[in-house]
Amino acid sequence: MNFATTATRTRQSMLATNEVIRSTYTLLSMTLLFSAAMAALSVWLRLPPMTHLLSAGGALLLIWLVLPRTANSAKGLAVVFAITGLLGFGLGPILTLYLALPNGPQIVATAFGGTGVIFLGLSGYALATRRDFSFLGGFLFTGLLVVLVAALANIFLSIPVLSLTISAAVILIMSGFILFDTSRLISGGETNYILATVSLYLSLFNIFVHLLSLLGIMRSDD
Amino acid sequence: MAPWSKIGWALVLGLMVVALIPRLREMMTHAPRGGRDDWVAALLPLALVVAFVALLLWLV
Image (cartoon, rainbow over all chains, first blue to last red; front, side, top):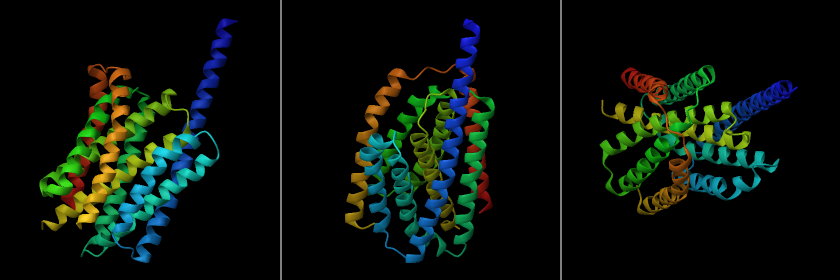
């Protein structure tokens, strides 16, 4: 009797976890498409660089102040689209800058494809191995804090080598976050698909922006 | 970068640092510790990411 009850609970828990994973990847796909459409609109409008700062600031405020209060309701979906739409819209001036380079479209396409390969590879690895990567939490958050402080300092120092190092470190840390977030989804550590989508989207967004930056820096050295 | 832009980005990054500290404290106290096998399993795909990015930089 106890065995049957435990088995039923385990099965229910697995079904719930699979449902969260499916909902997360569906919402992530939709937000990525929406974000790309907003980025295309922003490129077409040829908006000034200030747009990037304002969009990032607006998205961060939504993530901190609005998302935690709406993540458990239908309003959370609108907030996720607002966050990803703003971040996509803010990408416009950066993309315009890179697209104006002699081989700009190739750099943007490489960064886009590279981000896709990294995400699919790491998510596939975490889903296939079903390993628990929650032990990476302390390491990843410490790394992120160090990178943020370094980026803050580099705003005023403007050291090119430090920019390169920061971009490389962000790609590595965000890759770790993909493993961390995916394993939390699998283990049932994250049961809210809206929060899981935002976490994965931010990792993808940061990998794309910093891969673009690395490719752009390397190209400009030629 | 224009001075107003530098100040704006510094504010955004400064706020991110402030918001991150409580999460970091929580992670440092509650996150489980990984064994040798766990670290190998995590570092292997990350090493592949590094190799892949190096390949992209070489190709472009």
